Length: 525
Image (cartoon, rainbow, N blue to C red; front, top):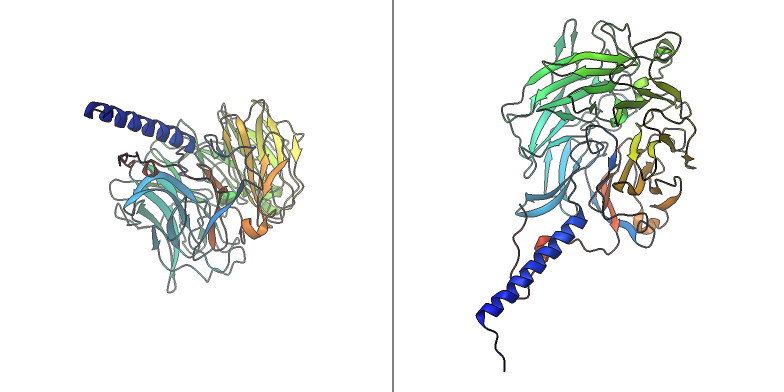
C-alpha cells in the first residue's frame, strides 16, 4: 500500500490552499465588494453603480430575482441606505447596510442576511410639532448621511425636539459600534451679517457631502413655513473635534432660496468646486440667489465662483416653481445638468455657467423634458452605455424617460418613455458592469420597485408586483433612491429596509471556504 510522505501531504495541502484562495479570489471578485458611502454613489451624484458584476439583464427576472429579507425599523426611511463591505463589526466580518429613520434612529444591518441589527442608536427625540403635512408624523433624520471610510465614521444630521426648543445636530458615529466620535454631536448654528440660522424652520433634506476633509450640510424649510433661507454649512470631519469651518446663506438680504434638492446631495468635482440648485426666493445676482445653479469655490471657505439663473426667474419665484426641486448632476467630460419644477432640464458649462439674461436662458441648453409637476422632480441619472450616453429622469405627475447625451448636448426627443405615472416623486438608480448589463431601478409611488433594461428602456425586466406575495416592498415614502451593491438592491420604506437579490443564490465569502484538512483562510479585515 502506498503511503504518502509528509512532503507529499504538505504539497497536496498547499495545492488545496492555493485552490481555496483562488476560488475565494474569484468569488469575491464576482461579489464586487462595492461600497456606497454617499447619496447616489459618489460626489458627481450620477446615480450609477458601474461595478455591479452579479445582477444582469438576463438574471433579473421573476424566476431568479426577488425579495431576500425585510427588517423592521422604527420610522419612515427618507435617507438612502448606505453600504460598507467586509467590515469588522459585532465580532465578525459583515457587509453592512446603514439605515436612518425619521424617528432619529440609525441602524446597522447585515446586508446579506438581515435579521437583528448589528447595532442601533437613538439620536434624540424626533420633532412632532412642525405643522407641515409634507412629512408626517415626525421629523428626525431626512438627509442621507455620508461615510468616511478612512476614519470609520458615519456623519448624519438629526433634528430633535427638546421641550419648546429644536435643534439640528451633526453626529459622527463609529461604523462598527455606533458610538459618538470626535467630540460629537455638535449643535448646528450659523450667523452671517443680518441672518441667524433658525433650527425650527430649517429642514435638512439634502444628502450630506464629504469633500477634502469637510462635511457639508445643506438646508431648506418645512412647507415654506416661517422665515427661512438656504444654507450650506461646512464642518471639519475629524480626527480632531468637529467644528464649523464655513457658512453660506443663499439669501442674506432676502428670504427663502432653500437647498432642498429632493434628497440629492450637493455635487462636487475633482477640482474641489461644489454645485447646488436653489428654490424660489429673493434674487439679485449679487448676494441673493433664489432659483439658481450656484458653483462654490471651497479654498478658504465657501464663496460663489459662478452661477446661472433662468430668464423666467421672477415667474418661477412668484408661482412656487422652484428651479431647485432637485439637485445638480455632473456628467463628463465637464457639464452640469439639473431639472426644475416646470419640467425644464438645464445643461450648463461649469467654466462659464451663463449668469442671467432676461430674454433667454444663458446656459448651454434648456428644454421641457417633463410635464410641469405639482410636486418635485428628481435629478437625472447618468450612464455611459455601450453605444450611447444616457440621462434618465423621473418626475411627479409624469412617467420616467430616457434621453441621449451626445457629449456636448442633450437630444430633446426622448429615447424611451415609461407607462407608469408616479403621483409623487419616486427614486432612480442604475447598476451596470461598465457599459454592459445596464439596469435602471425605479421606485414609484405605488410602492413598486421596477427593473428596466437601460439600453432598451422602457422594457421591463422585473417588478415587485409580479409576485407580490413574495416580493411586495411595503409602503414607500418618497425621494429615496434604491441602493445597489454586490448583487443586492436595498430600498427604504415607511417602516422597514427591504433587500432584493438572486433567489437561492449563495453568498461566497472567505469564511465559508474550508479545506478538507480543516484549514480555514483568515477573515478579511
